[in-house]
Length: 349
Length: 171
Ligand code: FES
Image 1 (tube, each protein chain N blue to C red):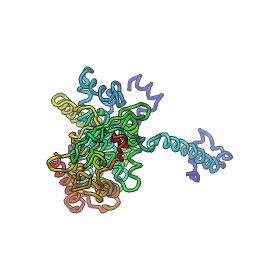
Image 2 (image 1 turned 120 degrees about the horizontal axis):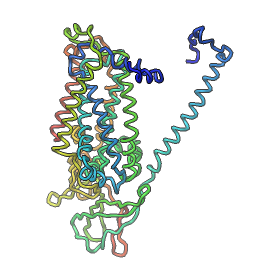
Image 3 (image 1 turned 60 degrees about the vertical axis):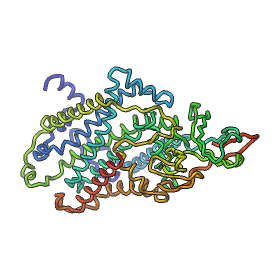
Image 4 (image 1 turned 180 degrees about the horizontal axis):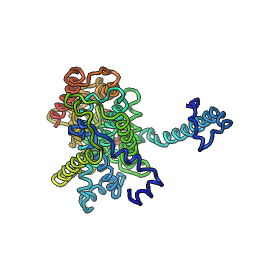
């Protein structure tokens, strides 16, 4: 250790924990399987969102009168504004995809089993918060898409039996969509959620380190479970390379498609067909199948059921078996969900 | 946690002050009391602050839609109204779409153009003689009754009256 590092360490006591973190032994079977990078890549994408988000705040005007013009200004006048906003926009899609894939990976490897139940639950919560992130961010440009998606989204809350109307008004900050709604969404998106998600990610990673990686499931992986490589640089470099690849894809989309900006919000337009962001399309489509009095089934019961079963999963599936091909029920359920979601998305596209 | 044994200290470091330590339970309870009070006060304030004025009912007002005699009979007509209302700390335009229908230029049926399913804008389709909602394919009659699709209720009727030959609606 050179003198400066020692000087800092004597005053902060950081070198122990930092070294511990970076020298963490990663089992070989994990290091060799790229599916294990999905969690780290989700975290990297989150960092990208934080950085681009902080940049956007420097120009964004969270008022019903100024929001649209400020986003237009960011997109077309600020040097590299198209890039920053583009990466933030497409980054949200990347975040949803990566988080979902990461969850599928952990699910199929049965990593939620004892003693990792809490880690699974923080993960479920994080996925939920990512969706809230995306929903609240969608409104901020105050364009047609955001306005109408929020109108429909808050009406979904409004369809909850009994408390729905109150819930909807709390969400909107009033009877109608307006300044209070925009302010609420902005505060949630740019202050509350980053703090919550940041804390949960730290807890999520801490839990992972505390328990170590879940046991290997295949025979060949088990043979590799007694050999280790250090987290830095062996593991980190893989994440970094793929992270850069993701950034490149986001830059490509920002450059070739640009982040979309619709016409300014207009409550009186009757020919605008609201559509949510693509990863909510399956739900948008599903709503068509629940007429009249059945509406709360689609808007309340099904989402609560899905969320509830995800939370309850580690307490229901408690057997020793971790190999997905020996667990037809859990494997079947996940495949069924995936197929239904993909299918509804395709119909709605 | 208060009845946990304290770990023994190194001789070099010193000793626990046993007399002070004997008050651990009381002090611990005091701490939780104070912290709980502070927490409840903070959360309560935050909650009330965040609810804010969100639950105030929508301010309603009569607006003129046009001269009663000028409405075409037997036809659904689209109207856009626009009024200035207080929106949190600023005055803003509240605009909306209404559909008016009359047989005799005396009685008016005025419907709010907001779909009762999830709030999209319905469109009047003259040839098909129904309102169609583009979002999840909801359909309504010209009186606003649900024909098919997910909407749970008829389109909302808006109070309308004729005063001195002028049609007014409560929005
Ligand atoms: S919002 Fe009109 S049918 Fe769903």
